[in-house]
Length: 90
Image (cartoon, rainbow, N blue to C red; front, side):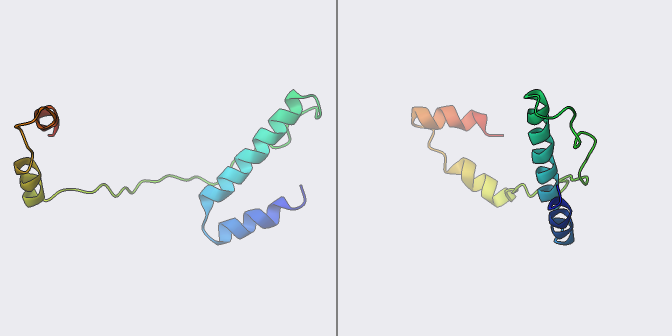
């Protein structure tokens, strides 16, 4: 695998840890497949692990109290759909 280290360094330099992790996973899966097909005796990429990646920040939109009030007031409860949807909202 002579071309892999430059790819790893390039991705790490750009801060794309997830990309490095995905590339390493693809190499591990390829070698697992080669071992299963008895093309190789063992998987050289078995112990290779990528950088840690965790998406700890989320961006869930939150309604303001005015927007929530407008949403509930605009609901048409005279129809079956309005009656069904109304109670399901928090």
